[in-house]
Image (cartoon, rainbow, N blue to C red; front, side, top):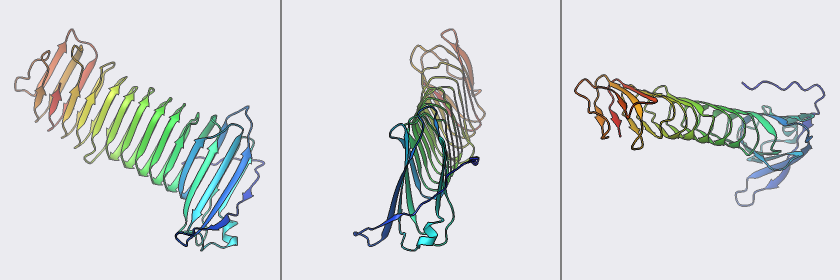
Amino acid sequence: MIPELRLRRSVTLVLLLASSVAMSTGQVSREFRRTFAVSLAEPVSLQVDLLDGDLRIAYARDGEVAVSVAAQNASSMDQQSLSTWLVMAQTGNRLEVRERPVVGSQNLKLTYMIDVPYRTEAHTSVRRGKQTITGIMGPVSAETGVGDIEVSYISLEVDAHAHTGNLTFEVVGGRIEARSVQGAIACQRAPQGIKAETEDGDISLAVVGASIAIVKSGNGRIDVGGARGSLVVSTTAGGIHVKAVLREDWRLSSKSGTVHVELPPGSSFDLDAVSDFGDVVIARDDLDKPTGDRRLKQKVKGGGKKIEVRTETGRIAVS
């Protein structure tokens, strides 16, 4: 849970949304925009705590934070309800955007857009809704109950957690911690690597540093391409496919899924592959074929970094 900001001299702003009528649907919509001046001398610390609505945080310009809110299906909300709906507070470069429960707001469709300077760290919590965070320094911590989280072009570390939702990361300079109970995790171009963990869902990693990928249950599949560091990968019924140049040790395991390892020709490595009840299939000229014990332990081209593969009933393929 994201900690509450302790604001000693906060300025609380009661937001009343300006009304406009959507002519094509006849539904009442309301829109609001508010800007805050911030110092260039230090990063902006932004905390957002929302109940229901889509959220986008993106770099726009330095020296200013701009908050835009659009609400559809707002006809059921009177002025008194609006006056207690959204609270914003600022103390220096620390800003808080917080939504409070309001009677009659259950059918509202809310969209939040927050433009920030590049030097911004963001801490967000959304009970239901999609989050998109892009183009800021970070760090970023984001959590959601139901909804996807997309994070891209962040310089520092990222921590994202969804109960039900997919997590997507692209071009992140710091280490990533990603957890989803029900949802897929995808990451590309993360040189410091990622720890990706889901109860049930696929995991896809591309061009990543030292990484851990775990599917705890279900049929989730794990695909890794362009690994730049060590790998620890495990799943239950899903398959595993790793295609990369071996730079550090790999440990790959699946209870019942197929584990497929692809290496460039001429690679040197130590292979230790064991399947308790499945087949071990070799499609390389520089590796011996297993001799019936479903285990292959061999140094290739003098040996090198280690590849350890384990399955119970699954198949192991090395090519």
